[in-house]
Image (cartoon, rainbow, N blue to C red):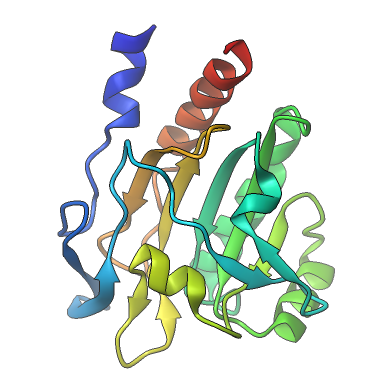
Amino acid sequence: MLKKLLPVLMMAMIGSVAANERATVTMGGNPVALSGSLPAVGEMAPGFRVVDDSFTPVALSDFKGKTVLISAVPSLDTGVCALQTKRFNDEVGKFDAHNVVMLTISTDLPFAQKRFCKAEGVENIQVLSDAVWRNFADEYGLLIEDKGLLARSIFIIDAEGTLKYSELVAEVSEHPNYDAALKALQEIAAQSSAE
C-alpha cells in the first residue's frame, strides 16, 4: 500500500518551485512571483487563520483529527475558480464527513463568498476568506505579488497534521488535477482512519 501511495503523496509541485523555495507561476502566460515559500510535503502543515462568511475566525486546528483538502483559488468571481469550487462541493459527499473536510480559500471578501455560495448552491464544503489577515497566504507562500490573490493550488493534510499532497498549478487560469487530488484524498483518509 505504501509503495502505491508514495508517488501520490510525494507529488512534485506542478508550478516552477521546489518546497521551501520562492515560487513563480504564470497569469495569462506572464510570470508572476509568489511571496514566501511553499510548505514541504512530509512536514507538519503550517497553521493558519481565516474567516467564514460571518467573519468568524477559523483555524486549521479546528479540523484536528480530520483529513483536510484545501482548494486555494484566486477569486470565486472567475470561471475556473467557480468550477473548481463546485467540483469539490460535488465530490465531498463521497467522503465520510466525520473524517474528511474540504475547504476552499480565496482572498474574496466573505460577503462575495456568501453571495457566490448561495447563487451556485455550494453548501457542502466550507468556503473561507483570507482577506482579513492574509495569514493563509503568508503561511503557504501563495500570495501573488502585486495582485493580492492566491495562486491556484491544492493541499491535503492528514489527520495527524502532516502535509501529504501539494499541487501548485503552473498557470493560474488552468484547472488543478482533480483526479489526482481526489485519489490522494481517498488514500490518505483511508490510511488515517486505519491508524
